[in-house]
Each structure stands twice: as C-alpha cells, then as structure tokens.
Length: 395
Ligand SMILES: [Mn+2]
Image 1: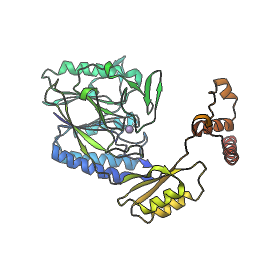
Image 2: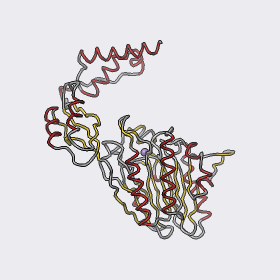
Image 3: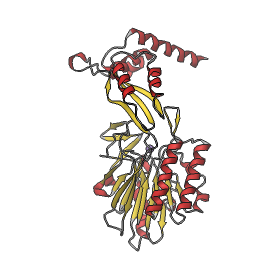
Image 4: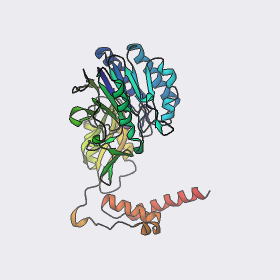
C-alpha cells in the first residue's frame, strides 16, 4: 500500500491579520495534484488542521471543497481520509461527510460514544485489498483509549494481514517542537494546548502512525511514526523545507518505506538580517540585499531602546524597491542582560498576585522578559491603555 501523508493545511490562514494565504495554498494543492498523478498513491490522508480556524469563512470552505473535487478528478479511484485537528470544528468537519462519502472521501470529526461505548466504525476506513486506516481525529486526553480500541477492532477484521495505518492529531513526547511554543507540566510536554502522550501507550498493531499537529517534519519510533509537517509555511519559525510524505508498506508487520517530496513555496519568509543588527545597519543591509523572489519580510533589529515610530514606514519604503515583497513586522531583540546586571526577582504567590495592580503586573512581565525595569514613558503609556480598557468595560 502506498500512502500519501499530509497534515496541517490551515486553509484560510491570514498572516499578521493581513495577508490571505489562499494563492499559496492553491500553489501547494496544484503541486499535490501533480504528485498524485505521478505517484498513484492508494490513499491520501490529511491528519488534522484542515482549516486554520474552527469558524472558517465560506470562501475558505469553498476553496477546500473545490480543491478536494480537483483531487477526485485527478484520481477518481483514490480514497481521501481527512480528520479534524485542534484548529478545526469537529462538527463542521463532519457536517457534509455523508455527501463526501459518495466520492470516496471520508471526513472524521470527533469520537462519539453511545451507552459508554465508542462508535468505532466511523474511524475505520478499509482500502479494499490494500490495507486499513484507523482515522483518529484530535481527541481530548481522556479519550486516548480510542486509539487502542479502534486498533483492536481492525485486528479482528484484518484476516489478510494487510498494512494498518493509524492517524492522529496530537503531541507525542520526545518529538522536536522547534516551530512551536512548548511548555512542560508534571514532566509532560504541552504543545498548542495538547498534552503529550507516550507512543508506548499505544498497541503495537499499527504499521505506520501518520501524525499531524507538530509542524516540524520528523520520523519517530524507529520509522513507525511520523509528523509529515505543514505543507505551507505558517510563520517565521518554520524555517525548514516543507514537504509531503509518501509511505509504502507491503504487508502488515513490514517496516514502512518513507520518502518525502519537497514542495516549492510561492512566497518565502525572509528574516533580514538572519542575526539581529542595530536599526540603521538593518535598513542598510535590507536596501542592499533585497530578496529577488516574492515573500514576506521581517526586519531583525537589535535595540535596547524602543524603536522610533517611523521604523515601520522606513522598512515599507525600502520594500517597495523590490518586487512582491510584503512587509511583515519587525522583530526587536534587546541585547541580553546577563549575570550580575540581570536582577532576578522571586515569583509572586497567588495572594500577592491578586493584590497587584494591572500596571504592577505589566511592569513585572516587562522586567522578566527584558531583565531591566520599564522606563517612565512606557509606564505612562501602559497606564493610559489600562485606563482606556477600564473605561470601555464600564461603558
Ligand atoms: Mn497545525
């Protein structure tokens, strides 16, 4: 069985509240169709985060529908299995599933229970004569037993020993989270609000675990599990080649053969310069090193002071001298305050925290983030914002 594994499409994504990514998604989906034509996979699977938001616009939904129909036209015999991720609304994902099934396209939104029993049938997609898909969408922690329950059901049905693919949209412990903010609680990693689970807790019956959620592509569990990564770069942290994954497994129990097909981005993400530099140096460097293919530009500035208010306009002006360059913010890094100069303060306890004013909490946040105290100008500005919010609330 040959599986085309992808995830985290994030259709409808808008970058920096401003740049609609649809053209870039179209560019990706055009490439996906060509890959399908060349590779003839037996199934296309999308492991969650089909949309960027759980309330996608009508335009975003139409866009996904039209593109899935294009894929159906290119490969009418190939089933498509799509699961909801934590960014999706599970009920919305399933709302048209009956219609889509008519064209061999399976939308699986959420786990359902009747009389305390999971409905397992909806998670089992048989690829006749080829293999089985255990299509598990994003599920909250307490439903993690679903993985094994569905695998056990497949085990009963798999009398011909065909390959078994498990789908999941979750955080797996020991994965690389570089493109994400991660925290840790009680020894467990938490990424994008999903607690990590251990692969040891899942029955060994699957041959390949097709994961979504972590956007950094990586193979885990001795080649039996993989995050294929997002196909379209979503932010400046995702500085790695974006790709789709093609997995081939002949029989149940065989080691999967994993290949990737790199995707060509329509627009690139340029962080300029790559290491933060003082404002004037950055502007000069940008002026002399304008990228020659289209993309989003973030200026990388090193400054202990707040930047002047015309900084954005100056960067935008330089970008108009290039072609297809989109201003995307500047990143201001403060020179590190280290050692003796960095004043450590003990954490607030809960009752201290409750007694603090919003300004005091903001001051503390600023201090912890930068290692120095907030100056008077910023303090006055901060207080003005707090007053304004309070006024809004009492209106
Ligand atoms: Mn995602």
